Length: 142
Image 1 (tube, rainbow, N blue to C red):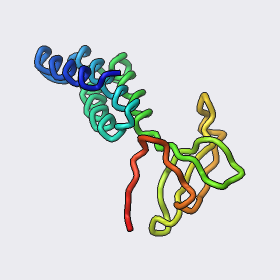
Image 2 (spheres, rainbow, N blue to C red):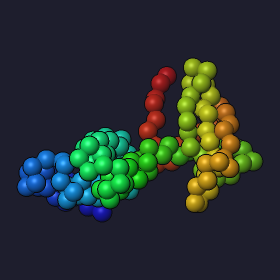
Image 3 (cartoon, rainbow, N blue to C red):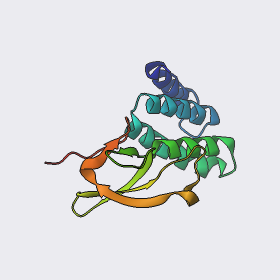
């Protein structure tokens, strides 16, 4: 995916179709967000998709293809996948939150393909044992 070309296309759609509410503009924005995610620019993708979902739901409703596509990709952008180091457990987990003043990270998983959240467990690990997947936002402190 070429993010620069998709950004240009998205801005052309904004101008040509008079804003974000056009289905063409929403689909172009979703394509841009997918490209941003593949380049591990998930925060940018999430910000764009949040706007697109809001506009699409307001303009087209929940059952419209543009809304469904935007919501689906927003879910991908919000994935916070991590791996636990030095553990007998293997696979990807979803980071949920930090506890004990950032000392522990609560995760859910392991994540199966296709994902079945009902079979996943929540566990807490020392934050130093967590390795984020590329594109997963992190907070640095120290």
